[in-house]
Amino acid sequence: MRGVGAWFPVTALLVWALVALASPWLPLTPDRIELPGILAPPGPDAPLGKDDLGRPVLDRLLIGARTSFAVGLGVVALSTVLGALVGGMAALAGGWVDLTLVRIIDVFLAFPGILLAIALAGIMGPGIDNVIIALAAVGWVGYARLARSQILSLKQRDHVVAARALGAGPSRVLLRHLLPLAVAPLIVEATFGVAGAVIAEAGLSFLGLGVQPPQASWGSMIRDGVGYMLVAPHLVLAPGLAILSVVLCVNLAGDGLRDRLDVRSARRYIQQS
Image (cartoon, rainbow, N blue to C red):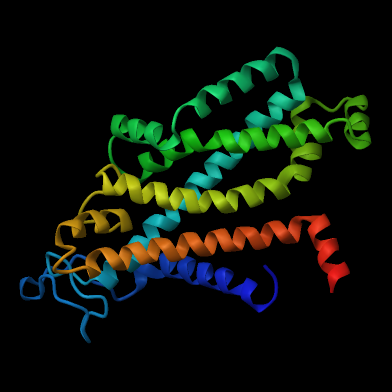
């Protein structure tokens, strides 16, 4: 994905991030209840209509963007750091350490990730912090496997062997000489991880394990609007389309980033042009 079209998903994601960061200072009234406006369709005073309590859907949608943004970045940051350290330690240490950590990764992969996240969120209780911890606890394994495969192919390079010969410890070798070379594929994987985290947060909020009322979340908005789909479909369509657009743009941006970081793909593109 190259050219002008490649910038569209990036621009859309920047707008999403700016809205999420600026939402606390915008003149929004997501919790204002207006009984005469219950289930009101979209109109001049409420571009996306109002919900079952007369609250403006657009205002709640913009506030919910902050929740999705925080969960997406928080989960990816924790998962990437934890996975990179575990995978790098396993590849660098080798032997029984590598075997043990690989078996632990296999055990986590044997369970459906979303079901394990639901169980952890149910045990810890609802809340955005617990959602981030629960999703990161099951999301780090993919980054660990990727980091391990990258480190295994890099640890025999000359500069790594030279660093070890000069007395550099395992932690210094890993953090200064190996992980910087493996950061490109990890960034691409993290980009796709944001989309998965947004969907997972919406699913947990839909089940009542995410943020709690009256705080807005796209998943909880869909849950509240399911019972009124026939009379007020905008309650489900608005947050559903928001999730669809963000996840689609994240995936498109991830594809573009992967193509730019792929040297072989870049060479083929130059030769064709």
